[in-house]
Image (cartoon, rainbow, N blue to C red):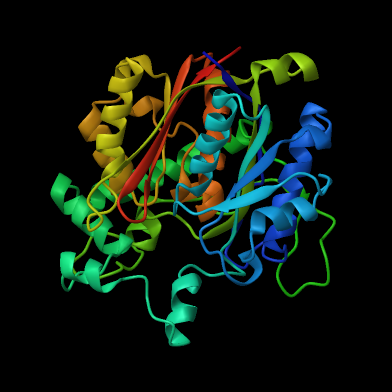
Amino acid sequence: MSTAYIVSAVRTAAGRRNGRLSGWHPADLGAEVLDALLDRTGVDPAAIDDVLMGCVSQVGEQSTNVARNAVLASRLPESVPATSIDRQCGSSQQALHFAAQAVLSGTQDLVIAAGVESMSRVPMFTSSELPRKAGLGTSMSPRMQQRYPGIEFSQFMGAEMLARKHGFDRAQLDAYALDSHRRAKAATEAGAFAAEILPVAAWKAGEQGPGAEPHRVDEGIRFDATAEGIGGVKLLQEGGVISAANASQIADGAAGVLVASEAAVRVHGLKPLARIHHLSVLGGDPVVMLEAPLAATAAALRKAGLRIGDIDAYEVNEAFAPVPLAWLKATGADPARLNVHGGAIALGHPLGASGARLMCTLLGVLRARRGRYGLQTMCEGGGMANVTIVEALH
């Protein structure tokens, strides 16, 4: 059977909304990651078979196939094709799946799976709100309305429903959020992100050009976070449990991995970081929406012939605190192996880039802990979840 390897993984440090990456056009920011993968591996740019790039809000500066635009803004030759992928928050994790599947099928040898999102320049919901305001309708079709009468698909309401269903109160969610910041702070101060982060020029929106100081630290980490501060943030709805402090942060960023076949590893003298062990995706309830990683993980472990205890590190995207907490409860996983270096609550969630970002971090954790298997999953709009299991090669 064919084998697919990850031979390089790199990401920008996330920028806060209107922060240190907000001056970057998303195609140019994505190009920085593409170029970095070439630099780190020494692969001939013309040998890249395809670029698959996740992006959720594909409108404005992220429209017209942002993946191809990133290629044209990079050092890759025009002969390298590219396509943009939208599986909501799992877009660049799906890009990794497609890249691995292309390599496993034997049809391609070197594929870049990446993601980019500038939530400062293309705010969340722009791709649905602009057409609605222009009189072009909404994505909720008549048949969907018949199947889900009077129901509005909302991740925020889904987070509230998930918390209630699994019995989490605000104190538990806030405590988890505080721990995310503390883990991210400890990882940053220990240099745990150094190998995965690509320093890029800091550049705020409205400035003339990039500043001299490189951006190399995730801007959303609250190094002075306290329980009192997190608990004092206003709830998103009266009587609820979700606040901006126990949810992922709006962010800008880009990330990518290079997937290679066994033949490409040999021909280009590459050193694999990990082998793709399992890939799957599963749909679930689109109303609660955020619960799919629970069933998807159980199904993935069955298919892979593994138990949760066989996995040395888990990355479960912190879209909202109830997601990883419900995942822990359902799987019986070891909390000490979950989001070891913090998650999106502290590090930020640049939607289309987050899947690749999680893989960069997961590989770093496995390397630091000399772990063998790592599992990544995340909730996605529409009630879906991807699961990726990798085997680290030390």
